[in-house]
Image (cartoon, rainbow, N blue to C red):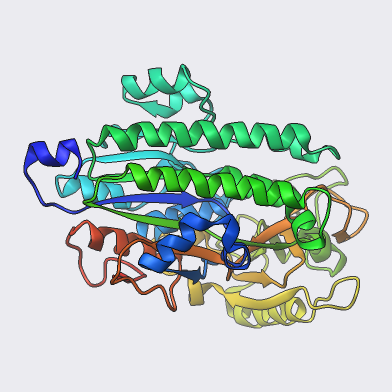
Length: 448
């Protein structure tokens, strides 16, 4: 039991959640020697693979994980979203998340929350004990609150994100060094505030694994040059989680979870190039690079990752798909997507999902009409600029997000991961905190 717990004389349960952007459960299961801490948590409590959300894109996943709600409720569908009634797009930030996060619920219940580096949280909330926002924050000075946290982080080696541009180089040495330094500095900050022991809920997110996996997953799966370096990086991650686990007071339950898994990328796929070649999309003029450049004849367009929109009359400014033709047109596009094949004849889509199947809520107006969950190997891009082809096998990234390969580890003997998904994380954490909520407050359910 920690000092703060002894001083307040309370038996209120506490929780630490360590989030990982892009940890593959399959990687953990296949390499237990690399992950002794996560393996021990699974032995002591529960651990397993869970499903992500549709779409399995980080900017959509983190709001859903931290609210227990689908994108139709959070209002965030991806790294780039469309304005209602417009072709203008924007990059969602923390204030675009339309519903309370789990730390808001904890704070409303009178608990203290420390939140560090969760993506899509900028600007930092002044309503929580302390917060440093995650990637998409403009700089560290603006991302941290209160002043004590800002001063510590700006005076340390703490970084908001890994420089992904370094991963584009053939020689990955500098990239790996930068990623490891980012991981180590973040772990040091997490341990500092874990040991401060003045919180009821601690949330800290490691995002470096996602960056490393994007550029080195091909080496891992194919036995390439940097296979052992990828495993060594994850071993260091596991060691840091172990140090945090050892530093936690005995009254704290540790939960470790990821937003999505990883699989081998074979082709970058330019969805708008495909739509244009198939007669669904056309542009005004030859110089186009954005959604705003589509012309009045376009029937469909796409945003990353694999989100397909019909150009609907009355919904889009220059919509041409009539309301009474919507279902017929959507069925036509769905059929085309389901029959779409790659260069080797393999189907691009594992499945094509209708908007009403996965998106429900007050913010469903900007939901895509169809979402393609791709088969392994096909990484679906938007690509409004002209491309020489629909498929590109020469990109620098060799790893892509996997929907069904996220991971969850709960250091509690009553946990059951089983048939779980990302939407179950928030209600599980709140149940462990003994924070009350209604039966219909979440799209997921507690696993404890």
